[in-house]
Length: 278
Image (cartoon, rainbow, N blue to C red; front, side, top):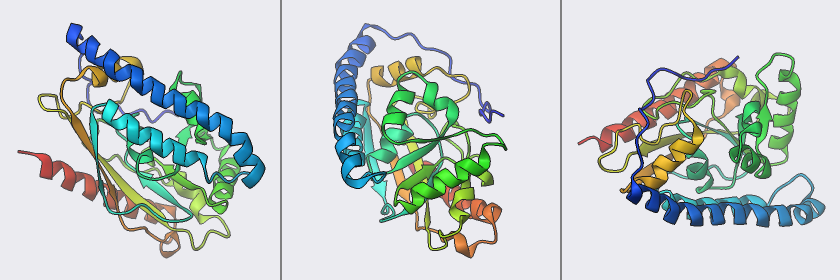
């Protein structure tokens, strides 16, 4: 069942003038070169990495970090980091506002995402997601046991998995209720010492743009939204706030854990957005 959020009407499409198209081409060409050049390098190195370390990925995720750090300025976004990412094995959860969250989070630290199965088939995005080690999940009761086992296995290998527990993206101005079932794997046997880190992603629009500029939700198409971002004349920014890690073992069940994580992420977003208001 889809959890697509439609709680606010998407912005009306805006015409992109000649200057906007010029900005989009000038920034989009190097963005494509950096993104797909990095992808090509990862595909070349992955067989060697697999031969030396098996399912572990100590090298190629760092290429993704470098690519995303180069990509954000090309998207006209300044990255601001608060706190420190989790060191070592563990899981992370974050609010979800946009496809651009992937660049912001990957620019901070090596990690792998957990995404809904439909993403694997999306043009461009799905290809990149598969190449960077995303774990795809189908939201059906029948698939749940196998998916829990797959996620737990990756956590045992030391992969840091990042989940968007809202199950959908929003306009970036709120945190939607967390879905407890997406946290099942952290309660698997043998992961009692695991830590899970709440992360807040707060987007701030370029000057003169509406507050939801970076939000991507409902039935909005990827291509026009990317064009809008590339064509914008000003620079925006994104805050990535790494909250203190939480121990799942200290919570009675996944629902209690989800409430704690949701509370931390929401408080971080509300504080970040309040501080940016004039």
